[in-house]
Amino acid sequence: MNTRALSLIIIFTALAAALNIYGPKIPFPLYPFLYFQLWEIPIVTAFLMIGPRSGLIVGAINTLILLIFFQGYLPSGPFYNFAAVLAMFVGIYLPYWLSKRKCKDDNFGNYLRKHILVFTASSTGLAIVLRVLALTVINYFALPQPYPIGLEMPQEAVLVFLPLGAIFNAIVALYTIPIAIAITALVMSRVKFQ
Image (cartoon, rainbow, N blue to C red; front, side):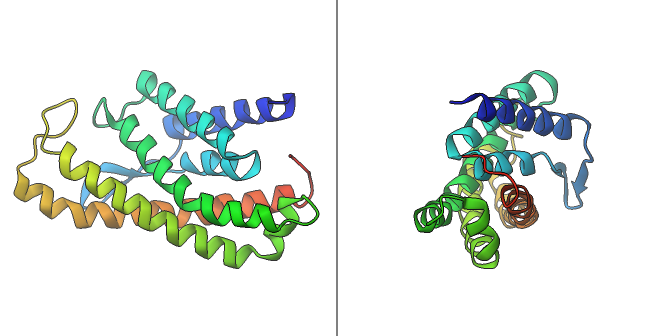
């Protein structure tokens, strides 16, 4: 890993942690323990701009920071957040990998700028599906568990929560990924990172 990549990892990690701890937190109206936030944007931007491994590093370090400083409603919450980010990464990776293979001039930023609508639609759509599926399964098993793993929800309450949780997760991916792609395309079309 070169010095530039390491520096960007530190910057994106600090930005993600700062946004999570100090950034705006808009509660989901139906379940106020879920928050719309901006902290996932720097993690996805790191994934796209520096590479998948760097995105994983930023996401993992952010999870550790959250465990110490801002766990949210549950102490295990940062792990659920990390699972959501990983599911999105899988959804973003296939279009990312195909795009990188098609880059003739080895500048992902230029390629992304030319094909931004297709890349954004395919990445966002696949990431939404995978995030919703992953978190639906996790929530189904975790929410009935006692604190600090879950909320001790009765099975009936969990079944009511799942579609609403799916809507929340879809919305988060729906704004996170296009914003991260736009930032990546803008920066990488002017500066070569890899």
